[in-house]
Length: 437
Image (cartoon, rainbow, N blue to C red; front, side, top):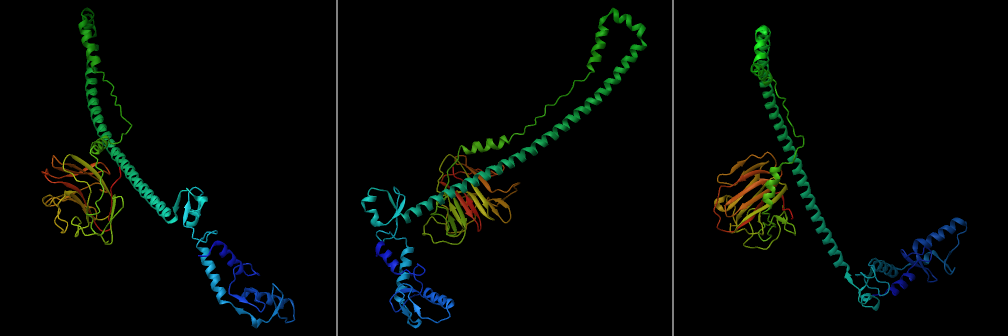
């Protein structure tokens, strides 16, 4: 490969002395000098405009006279100029003429492979440009995925909080209405009692006036009558009713207690690529899956070949376990657990008898628990953030709508004796996401 000095000399030779740029359509004249074709013609045309005489051409360099017919194109020089342009576009080293393919981190500059071996860069940290670029792109991509997942989790949490506050508001208003009914009923009863006691008091007053002369000496003589009368009078005075109404609405403690209890058994779940159907596209970290066009994947006995299913990498053989699944979009999906050894090459009915404990969404927000026969689920809110709780020893599998903290369904008690794994079926156009802890 030509050195940087050679390229520089070639560029000087291929530079037009009129426009001082690399020649375009180079031509030569009788004296041997070369120019851009348009440059030499333009000079002659300008002279013809300035003078009425039709004088011959003159070389701008040596002033030698030549005829217009003697201008000859130089195809070899044109090819050489194209080569010079291509070489310059490759960002070659000026000293060695080699491609700048190494980045010196100590000097912060691009160098060629020959520069790397010189004493000037001896002992410096160098990285191939291609390797550095790929590394940076992968790092940026990982950061983007992490940030996107974090934002999705934050959106879910804020939506949950908004829902809980709305539910608490409804509950609080309901309690106020009930309290209002109770207070009004009590006040009305008190009003009736007061009217009755008021009539009795008026009757006592009239009796006192009628028997004023006869009753007074006896009252003065024996104080018991007076005391009895006072007790009657004061017993009729009603006590004021005070209701301390709480005006601060707390976020549902029940939800947070439930979530706190479940999170004690939180399991870190990732998707197993060896079990994923060919139409399922899994992220590198095994936390996301989308149903799309078929892909080429190695044939394994673990892979689902009929239904778009995938299992979690984790295996449960004892204890209690809880995991969450976000399904932000999609018309159809299954979420739950299944026996580790369920067949992968047929579209069997998903039910406990065949080793599946799951719930399903299908056809416009229709939810069912995959019992035999399926149990319809009537959910108040869309279940796009589902919690799955497994108590292996007790034989229970429960589902929760973590959007509002409500219980969805618990399968009838089973007796587990084989390993279980997280199970997911992702329909066309659906997207599944497992939160990172």
